Image 1 (tube, rainbow, N blue to C red):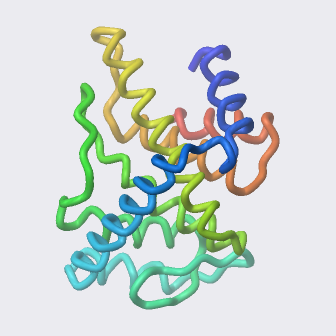
Image 2 (tube, one colour; image 1 turned 45 degrees about the vertical axis):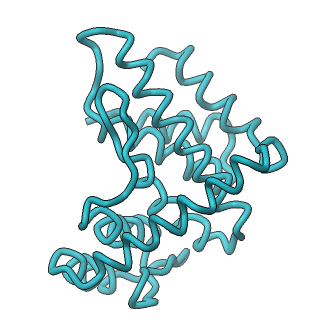
Length: 186
């Protein structure tokens, strides 16, 4: 990832605050959060979700995060994984019709995990969700302009998730840049 893109992502994320969000965006984001949690509840009893929750419950963490439905604490990454399985199982979560298409509400799983781990609040959930949507959809759009150079949506998703997690954990620009670089590495 070129340094100019990395710097742009970090600068944008670090400057964005809840106060910057228009009321219309906040309202729409609340709807998205509720819709996505509804998708997770609908997929909660699926075999993959049960397996993911069971696997997550095997791990403890000094900085714990909650797995939906079970209420059990685990590491933030495994909480995001288990919650993400529930969110995506029914495949009813939102779709962004870029090229490629993506499901930006996939980012709610890491947002909820990080906000819970840092004892954040609803404003943090909204800010993280908006930031995740902006980064993921922006990368999708930018990639589609570079014909033949577009990555799969999952690659853009891990970049957006790393930006969101670094922002919500309060990392510095350097730490955020490292997180993004690690996300892009195979």
